[in-house]
Length: 423
Image (cartoon, rainbow, N blue to C red; front, side, top):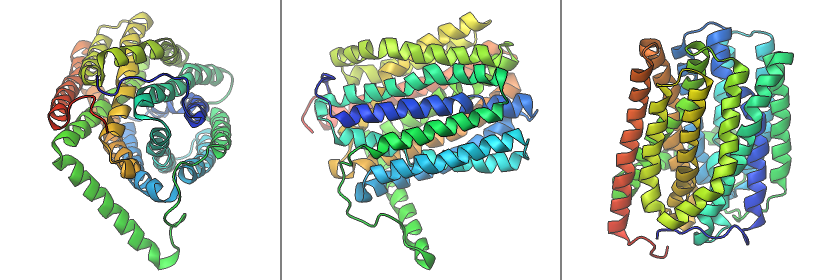
């Protein structure tokens, strides 16, 4: 089997430290971020496509930051980027809360949302590269599964807590609690030993010289993209990842607006759906890792992609909370299988000396998908939102394309190197 699951015992302590950091970080942010679309559309009265455009700009910023940060972390180390991004982002999250409390103009909120998303790009790919650095090949699936569990501990608590808090305090005030979570996460990451020895400057040069590194970073990004798309194996991974991000993001953007405006769920009820997702991950992640070990990544990647498409198709049949809960369970089953398998696949095909670059480029492509997802979902919601089955079948079609891409990825990878061959 390709990249079989290794035991969780004996994992480097940094795997657990980063999982804890993800749990605290996600718990804080999911209290507020999961309700941003509802706030803009329902509370402020803007069309869904307007929020989609804001999210598009924000995620383009994150995608560029992901590619830049991943490549830079190969030279200056992982921890400086992770920790500094968390502390700076805490300040902007608190500022966003103030803006919401003061009902600031939408364009000012949009600017802050873009900055926040860009700072997230300095965390995600670098954190995954750090975990990949400190484990053996046979431990990667388990290590990435534990990262997913950390993230979903946060999702199990954050949205439900945020929904409950919004009943007793203004929505903007909840952002201060989220900011405190980011500060705590930054403190946790200060204790993580950096696996990369610094080989370049820790900070960009000042003055007029800054434009040269910026231009160099853009050239590096374009070179990495061209290199990946020209590769028969990597191209399918990149395209499949883009489609996966375009699909899965609907769960955190379009689904919330749909459930509250079309099916009449309250924010608190919708928050419970995210809690169900988080709790289901905690229950299912370890059994899912055993399934990946038994079947192998080559089987799990296409089938979990198909299961993802099925979960979104089921949303169109939902008539209330119970139907939404069923779709969430199906989507969670797909998530706990796909995510660790995909992260392990990235690490397996990457050059060990440029692992941050590989995670950065995949993160860039993923975030481009995330960027366009709210706009696509918003347009579908505005156009055919009243035709529930047709709308969610259109969303599920993205998952069908994702499935085809990962079937091709597995076949091409097998042709290049037999499954299970040493790295």
